[in-house]
Length: 347
Image (cartoon, rainbow, N blue to C red; front, top):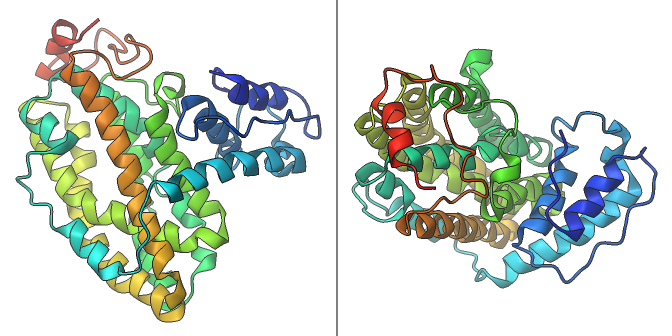
């Protein structure tokens, strides 16, 4: 279903989609907060037409010129903010080395918080936030495939093959995350929590779509994808440790254990195959690759700051304090994570 609007921009897009394609699209204000939820929800809704679409929405809206023009204005504001808030650089190897410097026992960041201090309600809220990303995991990177050639294309396809389960539907990472949500007693249906997730996660997911949909940003898309794969294995290891401590459902552990193993291999494929191949063919894209890495850092930091600031004040990081509640009385009945949830979650 279409999401609930949260301001003038998102209401303009959502109201337009209730009509047949070709209907008038309102002029969207150019002065909106580029990281605010109104702009990010409007942009996410536009991008949603390129994924699974929406019930009762005319599919011809996907390439409607009026809506594409409105989306372009939103993208311009968002992209301008990302460029303004990241420093320029061209040393790709130094950026990749920096990403590898974080030790497994690092005690900073959200993963370390969940590993060392997280309670069941923290973990469930984290799952809800990340569901917006993992319901579309790896999809935006598929748009990069026709924009690469040779070694870069072959290596990226190898990574994507793993992301999509190696030919096995039950191993597709999107499916594994849906299983995780089920195991945690949450709603695993597609984008079911979109109306309760604040702007930082929407911005992160929108950046992935932005980089994937524009050929001119293919270098940034590769940089972002490499950043994700390089940092995923140690981050997933922290999540496994956190979930083991919370006695979580096995499906929750399966998702992160898969990423500990797979992404350790993907890191080398991205660095030695995709990035090296891309820059051998198009060395002028080194600045764009660095931008993709630094923009990812920026938005991941905004997301982490939002969530951790809320948790340190013992309050929910979601828009609806009830949204991460138990889905049914029988969910995870044998898990300490589930039994402790009602008693530990703030109101």
